[in-house]
Length: 158
Image (cartoon, rainbow, N blue to C red; front, side, top):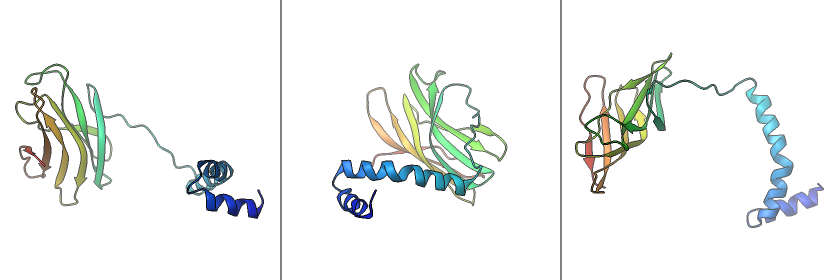
């Protein structure tokens, strides 16, 4: 690609998907190769979670390398939840393995899920999500955890 052609494509790319695609096809392999070279042997390794049932994790936060929290939901197969419902699910990484942390779901709800989590170095952890009743009423869900005590979740409407 000539320098003039490259300049024309760069100017057109913000509004022209064909021009963007041409630049992408030329430069992506080069950028990828450079990043791969700089990162070296770094790679993603799968790590088993502790969930015995089906858990879907949707958020993660780390206060340190041995204090990592992941949140989401899992199928709720035991009372007081109805079959097909979901309950909040929290996992804690201690630097060696994941363990399920006790979590609460509000009473009289069938669907409960956590989407985000923030972990502070002080030991305080906040998780947010939503819960819904069998009648379809849904509310925001906020859980707060401290290493000293675990508080009951607070269901609030935005």
